[in-house]
Structure formats: structure tokens, C-alpha cells
Length: 251
Image (cartoon, rainbow, N blue to C red):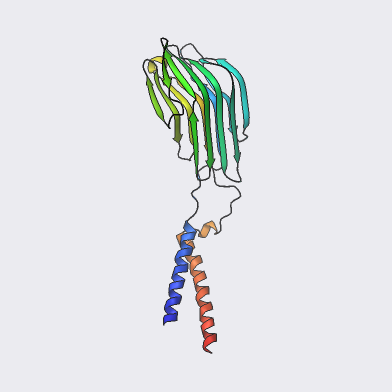
């Protein structure tokens, strides 16, 4: 009786353990493949100033580094080098993005914006993404009176600017597919100024299930019922082997 009871306990333990393994699968991101996007500046049309398309822009796939030396279009003015980079690895399900520029100015008509040390980054794996959008310094000037912007601000720091609109520093949002979007500076102007959006330092990335991964249990039986079938079969084999050993020892 003791032997039978111990065998039942061991079989039950094996069943529970293997059942748990069958459902404890990694929480992979929802994208079919890793993706990333980066650009340094993008603005909507502002008054008589034309819009600025994402510049320079790098997108993974194919990824790589895109640079632009100086930019004077619409409200944007800079002599610095603008750099956007993206990369990824389908086998690992990872991606990354970054956007940088040393100095950049914006002419908003009623105000001017000066930024230094813009640096946005994003890194994604199959289980999530992290990033930051930082500036070393910045200010918004209205009628010659400057308002300083916080350097290395925490995520989603919002600043209201009278007569202009609002600025979000280190803006971070994640969509339903697990894609993280980071904007170092996101300016939204008042409706009287066309309600235009201006983004400086954009990086977004999302991971995916590794392309080379192979599940240990066939997906058709990987659920609770399938896990129980596999565990039950192994438990039966175990009991039969124990019974055979008992018969030999008793002979």
C-alpha cells in the first residue's frame, strides 16, 4: 500500500510539473518581425512655413545610419549633423533605433526654441522595449524672455508655454504591439497656430518572437489538455517501470 501511495504521489507531481511547463511559454511581442524607425526632426506646416518631412530617416528593415549635415527648411535651422540609425536581428527578435543632433533651433513665429544635445534611443527584445529621449539643454523664448527646458527630464514631462502651446520632454508611448515610441521633444502648438506638431529626436522600436526558435512541445498539444496528455503518458511509463522492478524484487 505504501508503495502504491508513493507511486501515485510521484506520478501526480510529474503530471503537475509537466502541465505547468506546457503553458509557461515566453511572453513574446505581437509583431511578426522586429522593426524600428528613427528621425531627427519632423514638423507640420506652420503659418507660411512649409512642413518638414522626417529628416534624416532610417527604418529597419533595411536599417543603417542616415546623416544630414545642416538643415534650414520651414521652422528648422541647424548647422549640426543630424544622425538617425536603426538595426535589428530577426534571429534574436531584437531591434534598436537612435536619433541625435548637437544643436537645433525652431522658429515658431511667436516664439523661438533652442535645443542642445538631443539624443533619443530605443532598444527592443521579444519581451519588451526600453528607451529615452533626452536633451542636454534648451529654452523657449517669447519676446526675448527665455524659459529654460529641463535637461534629462523624466519620461513624459509636460511644460505649458503661454501663447505657444505645450512641450512634452522625453515623451514615451507603447502601442498594442509592444512598439515603444520615444520623442526627445514634442511640441504641440495652440489651435490659433494651426495646432501644428513638431517632433525633435524620434526613435521607435519593437521586438518579435525569434525567427529561429523551436518550441519543445508541438503547438497542437501545447495547451492545458495537450500538456496533461504528455505528462500522463510519462507518468504511466514511470509507474509501469516501478511495477516491473517490484515484480522482479518479489520473485
